[in-house]
Image 1 (cartoon, rainbow, N blue to C red):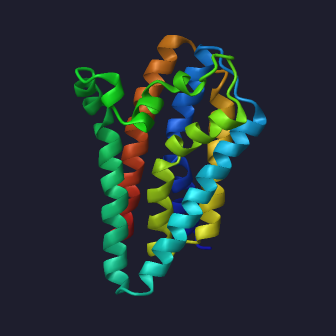
Image 2 (cartoon, rainbow, N blue to C red):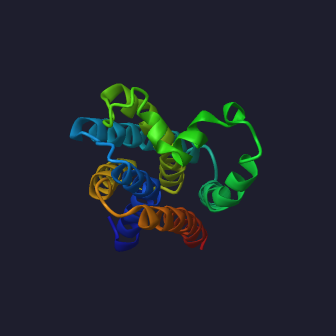
Length: 204
């Protein structure tokens, strides 16, 4: 694997999981524990989401012209990057909407403590599945991009799963409330910009 391919795989792994850092800090501030097995379940869900979407992208690339594949991969990953960047602005508008009308996955990422349904101050294996699905949304775009632009799908999936586990574990006990809020906002911006830059670079 070339140096660019390796960098792209690492960048997709990071960009797909910066939400995990924000969620980990939010849990740390609220003293909600994430056991290793729950964190592993979340990482496996991200790994599988990347793998499935990667194989789909790879299959699709065999039916279309390589340049169209590059363009499609760019459109998808840049589109997700823009969507991630717009989240803080969209959330301000959501405040006027009743909570039950909001997409449950979006609401879970905005208020990650809701994953702790039994208020046990610990994320159980069952609760981690719901949280894992919410956190794996960016991984779908990263996997599809890897497949359709002929990056190694397995390496990309492993990168996404590894960064999912490491970022959530490393950030779970970190920071004060103010630091968590600041980092959460920055993570959203950095994640969106990374995805956009990856897409634009692959096009050229």
